[in-house]
Length: 84
Image 1: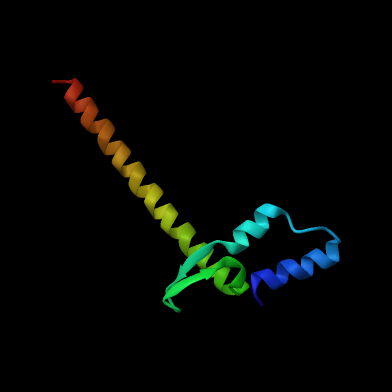
Image 2: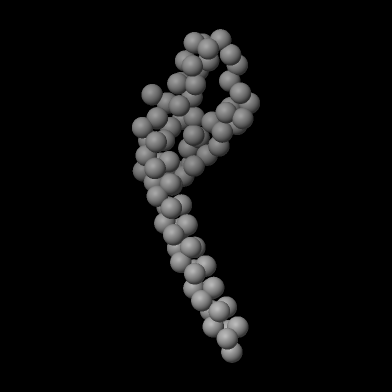
């Protein structure tokens, strides 16, 4: 089931309008490696969206670890320079 369909169903059960920020997010596009083109988030199936988010989280975590290591090296270098 696509995310936009899930949001539409939720809207009927809650009797509330979908918030404008959610409507905007559903229109945002991400590159689909399997399709080889950009697709709207709202057109993604929920399982694919979750997989995409998990993949992005892992990448961000790896980047954060790398940045942390670089910051340690910078501090070590600054300490070395200060001792000269």
